[in-house]
Image (cartoon, rainbow, N blue to C red; front, side, top):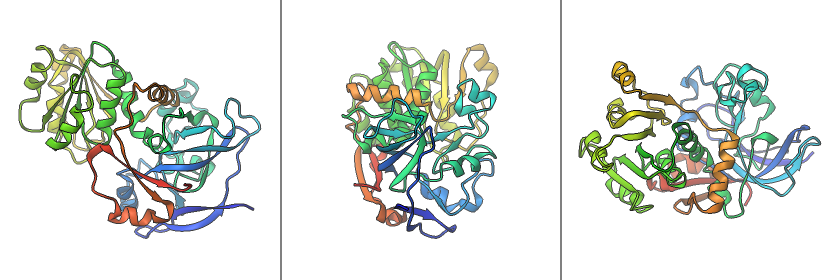
Length: 371
């Protein structure tokens, strides 16, 4: 039996244990991927530290478990019924798993499956453990298995490190697509310099949004964001001006077409409300950031203005493939990311305050199970 190195969590509050486990074998429609890069997501430490108090409606896998949300690597083996994927293909593995048989899945709406589950992370419904059992390895292992339909082929110009950032990038891409981002549209990103917000900015540029406005707390980081496309991006340090008035000043007197809220769980609801106030008639606000406070929306005023508020979770594999193609052409510029790579053997040190200071969303922390 072949074995591989994996980092497994055995007990709450304890470090992950580096141990040898069996190399997975693919079922008929699965592939095996040698993991070259796995994103060390900013929230991973919080998930592990609060395992016992984690949200009951977002089940975690039974311990011991191999975590690791966003993996990119090389296909090393394919099941006998796999088509269109070959050994040697460079891929990103979309970790989103669904049951495959419910009404949402039959409609092709995987993310709306009651049992939707992030391989190597957490689930969104009570049936998640069955999917964890079917695909037990996250990206913090040398190999993992995945359904063939979860693979995104990476252009040669997209590094594995950049590919491992696709989770955050894809989340914002899907949100922008839902809101109709493109030429002639103005996008306001609340939290533009963070991990999610910067991805939204890069995708908005790639999709051809005419103007991109952004707010954030760190003025120096905001300057770095504006430098990505100075003729199309304007930024506002939070609290220095009224967002509604500022947005209209930078948009020929009009409200914005789209608001992307990329603020994290600790952000105040007031910031979201300020951003929503900048919407034009018919504008759309999309929440992707996980803000925990409950904003008091004026639904009557929004109805009269035909404005919408959407929640957008993750992305489809098809959307991720579109995004990969944009990156392959250079329209989606991933060169701004600053990759910090750790061997798998150092994962505990990395999570235990061993990560370098973060340069906002520009920083990309990566574990490399296979160099």
